[in-house]
Image (cartoon, rainbow, N blue to C red; front, side, top):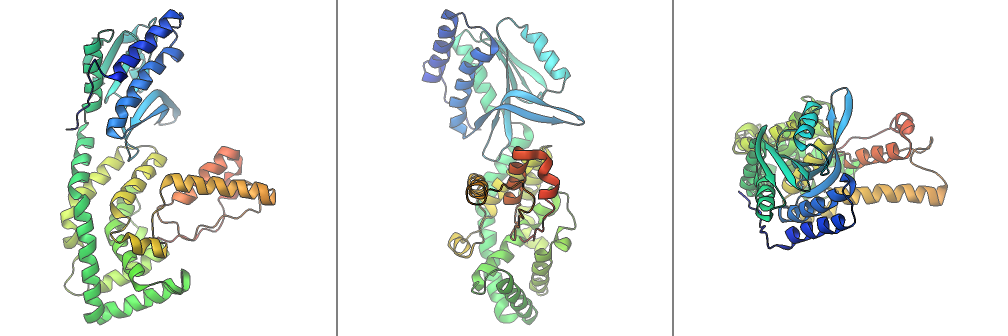
Length: 383
């Protein structure tokens, strides 16, 4: 289990007490100011795990306004690992904790903190209630906070670590199988040639066979995720490109190849993805999680081929920049906005939906009422 490197003598701890001392000398005691000291401590510790502290983190509730927690530490998969709620010294912390739980605050790894006290709940149980004016007690509660792993998270971490290389091995084995069948399996040869022609007509007349092989491999490795995590059992029948890819794969499996058997050693990994995604209620957060999974494990074993032919996952920060840039260019060059009627948005290669989802968010941020007419555009879905 990862451990947090933190001692009373370390700079983040010293900085915390120094900040509180400055506030005290100025007579500043309200929550909005004093919480920044603990916030900086959490941010510093979070960097050791590559976690980001998101302030005013929203947790959705059925038919109610979302809960806004002072902060949540999220990992690279956008999974919340820990929650933080701050109070000032005048609050009765025990009473505040019960109030928060009564309205639906999570009980899995959440710390309630005021300048002189911290209460930590993990797995629904009170595990620590300490005086954090004492340096060692502050260190102990922060370490317990960061080092805890909920069962589902622990399972996911183990699966991700164990199966990273195995996914690459499966991709390589699939490529070898495809290239063998291209020489010996007439049914596959004909199906592959027909799909190759379709791709060249639809995507790029100069598209190489290696790029189409990469498409088949990525589809084989990710189809279960798209189907199960998004609760879309008919995905492969309703997505026009997926239908064509399935025809080629059916030809591939017509001789001595079982998809289920080939992927069976990845079952626990797929299961971990599915179970972890099921813990995320917010659809946007679920998509962020799957985008990172896709980027980390399924983007492709042959990145040079993927980059050359445009078959590649685009990281979220780049997507954000591109969408913002389009809005800026529209305004500067045409006096238009993404929200204006007559501005048509086409996404010919939807993939994981990164671009179209980000465009929808941009439109909602500019003018929410414009979403219905803006998103009734033609969208050619293509994985």
